Amino acid sequence: MKTDLYVVGIGPGGIEGMTIEAYKVLEKCDVLAGYTTYAELVKDSFPNKEWIVTPMRKEKERCILALESAENGKTTAMICSGDSGIYGMAGLILELSKDYSNVNVRVIAGVTAAASGAAVLGAPLMHDFCCISLSDWLTPMEKIEKRLRMAAEGDFVICLYNPSSRVRKDYLKRACEILLETLDENTACGVVRNIGREGEMSELMTLGRLKDYEADMFTTVFIGNKTTELDDVRKIMLTKRGYDTK
Ligand code: SAH
Image (cartoon, rainbow, N blue to C red):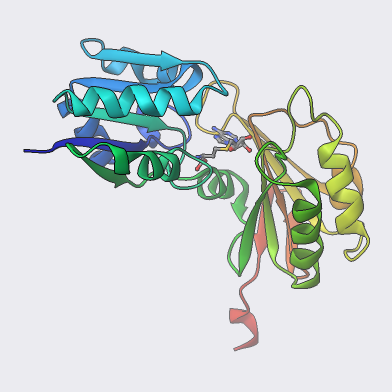
């Protein structure tokens, strides 16, 4: 009989942001695997599990350890923040799993940062939107820049993941400069940091100001479309879907 390897999105932060399905899966697993930071978020809730914890950039090693654990008959979960299929580990696990004949991979959905961050800001994603990661570790910069231009051209609400890191300090600035080729500098924007975690904070601003905003690697950025508005009194970012014209 095959053993299950679950790829589980734990949502933005701790237990509260996790789906009941994800929680139940983690409860029944023998082994939990994950990147150090995410493991820390949920470790206290699952103290009696065997843990496989590896640092960032060791994704392939971590996936192989999880696959081997399941191959050896232990029900295992690979945990990811947000949703495991959105800049997470679901894809790599599925790619690698073809070499593990005793493993049955099952993906469990989670609340991605676009959704949890949008809820903090109000309702910025009410209309067509796209997610773009500014990380050029696995994607060439030219492709990222093209996607930014096309998204602006299409008047999408844009949600930026990975807006910054220690080695990519000025990427958000560059992204804003590209968007400003098409979009007005007064375009409504919002940023959310540490969603669902200690130190959660959000801020509303224009695209002109976002250009000089110092994001970190736990920030998700929202850039509105032509109908998006900021309400500075209620502190919300709102994209109207158009009901008022019907
Ligand atoms: N699988 C994750 C995304 C991983 S990519 C998901 O579905 O949410 C990492 C990026 O996601 C971060 O750089 C940040 O832009 C965003 N992110 C993930 N968790 C976050 C959180 N708790 N608060 C703010 N941004 C977050």
